[in-house]
Amino acid sequence: MKLQFTIGLLALMTLAADAFARPISYPGGWMMMQMNDSNMHSLEIDYSPTANYSVGYVAEYWRENDWQLHAVSLNNLIKRWNLPKSQANIYLKSAAGVAYSDFGELDGKIEPAAFTGISADWEDRQFFTMYENHLVYAGDINKSFMQKARVGIAPYIGDYGDLHTWLMLQVEHNPKKADHFTVTPLVRLFKGETLVEAGVSEDGDVLFNFTMIF
Amino acid sequence: MKTLATILTVTVMFISTPIFAAEECKDTVNVKVSGLVCDFCARALEKVIGGREEVSGIKVDLDNGDVRINLKPGKTLDDETVKKLVTDSGYNVTAINKGC
Image 1 (cartoon, rainbow over the protein chains, first blue to last red):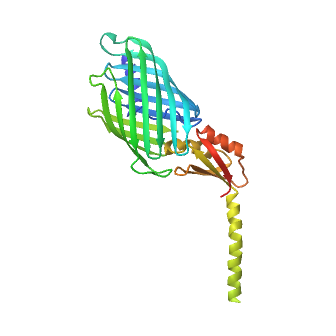
Image 2 (image 1 turned 135 degrees about the vertical axis):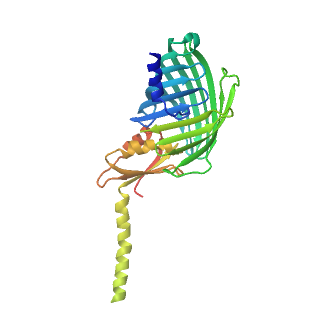
Image 3 (image 1 turned 90 degrees about the horizontal axis):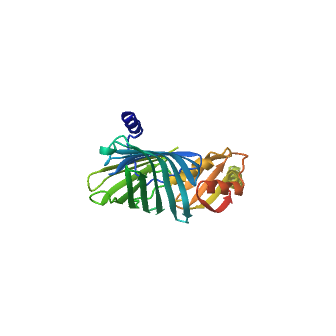
């Protein structure tokens, strides 16, 4: 069962993407986000009935303690400010499901699991800033709280339909890691319905994100 | 005679150009939108509005926050519908103008 579970998860995860993509697509649209950072790989697929919320499936694999989470996700746009030259948002990202461990004494253990977190961002045509936290409860398998923040700048302003580029700096705080803070410079590229992010942390961990809306 | 023909031709062209332009413009709705700063996010407008049967295409101007909706010949979209489509896409409408 353990092998099938792992193969199923790995089959869903090819590349990975950071959680900073907005989790809600256009009304009636789908979004797929692949995630990879120094802590975990994840894959999320969401459907947005409206521009205010999305539902879907999320799978996370946490490397350090070799455990997985499979859950139903619910993302809500709590508040949006549409300003003449900028936009700001607050999202609530949550999920509930099961966790499975392959680690030590917990090998083979299955626990109910959930996570929640707030994501807030502000951007205009040239500057970007975001904060996000992630609170996880998975019984004996894992309990954790992490935070991330980003700032970004567009080296050029593209027109609608162009390839857009952002240079970003991400700082993550994870109290469970020996070095609580991880800094990752990255580049975000997007064109049309596709967004890609790539970077390398100060510890040499690769960050590669892929998001599509369709 | 040749000069007269030239003058008549130029006069007809001068008069007819605004008429043709007016014909093109009557199938256009210009919307001023706030919060329109991100191309990736603005795809929602193309999906929601561009998918309407009345619409032949849209043009988004991120610099000025303008969305131009091109309608198919003989089709219309009232202001309330336009406002709802933009709001449903996650943005706010500040002005709607018909024509060029």
